Length: 432
Image 1 (tube, helix red, strand yellow):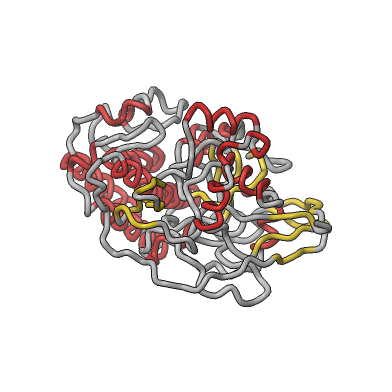
Image 2: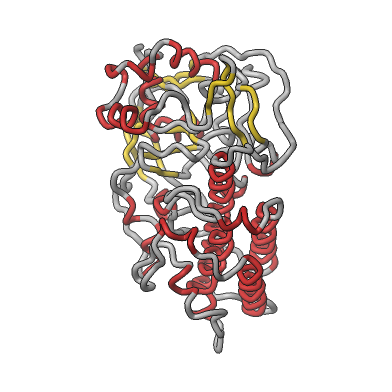
């Protein structure tokens, strides 16, 4: 999910053998291609900014991962599809060798889309040959499972990168025409509290997880409260109208520098038309819905809004405590809304919208849990080396596959990143 700083490595249990693993692998490979299907070859070529990648590159890189970390190691006599692909579609694995510069992926007009799809068929056939009719060694099954989850990350990246690419076109083209919003009554914001105490943090179960979710450890969390729902477009618009982007006292120093240097006046994809806010979406440009969760904001904007609202952002430990017993359900990729949805019912005494809709910025810098050790070899680069100058987001978005998210999942981005589906949930201290 995610720019290069979002790739992570698996360490834990949850390795599945035989039909279950293969079925998940096939389903994920097919879904990636289904997500690319509405796009033309020209769409798949464009790189709209250095942080984004062309769709064609996503299609190839996810195959490169299986070829490099599974097939070349485990399939006797495997013949690489093209030796140059080892460099062209390497992302940042220095232990593998050279990589084509990230900011120049859009210049790779060759190979064409047809050849990239042939590369996928080649890799798919080889994986089928490897897994068919045999019990995989645990290490091989673990690497295939990591490749599955890696590709799910790139499914979300594919959609967010396509959204940015299409937004650069004056024609305001749509990726899909299935506008998901229906009229709802505004839901009041309430606060749910948790007592302070020592809490278990990190993945402690038997399912798949990334190494940055471990080791599970005990951490003191002071009493806190978090908001019952995400911050909405209408609430963020009030921040704008109150001069939020013109008031330096609300901003972290680096955030204020970004406001001035980047000319930020609203979330990414917002614009004024005839005095009304309009928003670019994967369904094209639409009128801003005030009850829909705000998204495409940086950590700096989220923090400034929280300060303006008399609150703060949650720590990642607070968020995990609040989400630990929440059902893993929400507006995720399988809903096919491809946009945050307004909350229809805020009833009950537990927070809503914890999973899906928009990734939730936390105030926590991304770093290792106590006792963390990166995996050995090149695959260890998947995660640990990015524990610097990033902040943690939790909960997934409308573009996150359901099987990919859990309460312990740690996403991370630089604080100025805005092109992902990133939103805001407020928190406050117990005594506030």
